[in-house]
Amino acid sequence: MAADAENIAPTQKKPSYPVIDELRSYLRRYRRDRDLPVTYERLRNFQETAPLIDADGRATLWETVAYHAEEMRVLNEDLKRIYALLKVDGDFSVMTHLYIDRIDFCSFGNSQPFRIRIVNAYNDNPDYFYIKKADASRVYGLELEHLLSPNRLSFLTSGRMLVEEHIPGIPGDVFTERWLHHSDFKPIRVAKELVKFNERCFVRLLGDMRAYNFVVIVMPDFEDAQIRIRAMDFDQQSYNGRKNFYLPQFFKENRPLALYCLQHLRYETSLQYQREEQTLMLQRSEIAAHRLGYLLQIMARDRIAPDEKVHQLRESLAEHFHSDHYLRCQTMGELVRENLETLRRNISRPIAPPAGQEELA
Image (cartoon, rainbow, N blue to C red; front, side, top):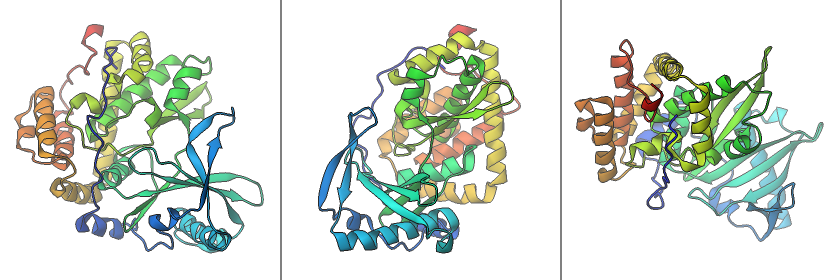
């Protein structure tokens, strides 16, 4: 990862793109699109709000919302049914002991999400899920994460609504501040995961992965601990025209992580980890070849970014990979597909230095 951080930010608020009929058909085929008993508009019909305070007594971006008593009773049952569809394909018989503890709303961001806190009455164990405005960019991002990363994701769409499971983990900015130099973690293992995460984002063109948009999961191992980094915000999937927007290493918020990698990784080792993740992504793409090909075929026909952003990005990628194949791409979906094709063509060749790593040679 590079040490030269940039002040990268979206130039304007990203518009929400509708889920087109072809994408809807894909989602139905893989049981992602369902008839749900709650709509986003119904949730917006709350009567009262109260600021949500965190454990340290500080106000958050969330507000807890309340509804009329009769509506709340019915709504809670319907939300439990959505959770059953999300987790156990609708088998409500194993969910009767759950109850809705709280509904929070956040007006910040494009998706304006509701966060539902659901609790097991037998052991008080909580879980969360989110209900948001449906956006095609986010749907493509979720599905590409499911198919090309080591992580599986559950989500549902219904009309103009998107339901997402909670992705647990330590927020990246909190991990950087409190845990990055903790003695429980071997620096090489942390740096390795940062390089691999950086590569996954770049290949599938997931943007805006500054520290607060991903989480770090800690997994005990027989020697010390392992970590895995997971994206948790997919709003900026294949929209921005700047190449560095898809490389987490270049965000100023991630500068401590980039410096950490420079401190602990040799140049040759960073190339090794980059190639490992490229190989794994190709293996995942081959396992899900039919499904991924179907998705990218739809994405290649879907206009989820202005033409000028597509043209700007394709020129940067053509220069980066020394390939004119990118210049034929007309949509973001075609650019994602070309990135994967570039990996297939180049997997047996020596790879170019990762952006910003030349100074380590």
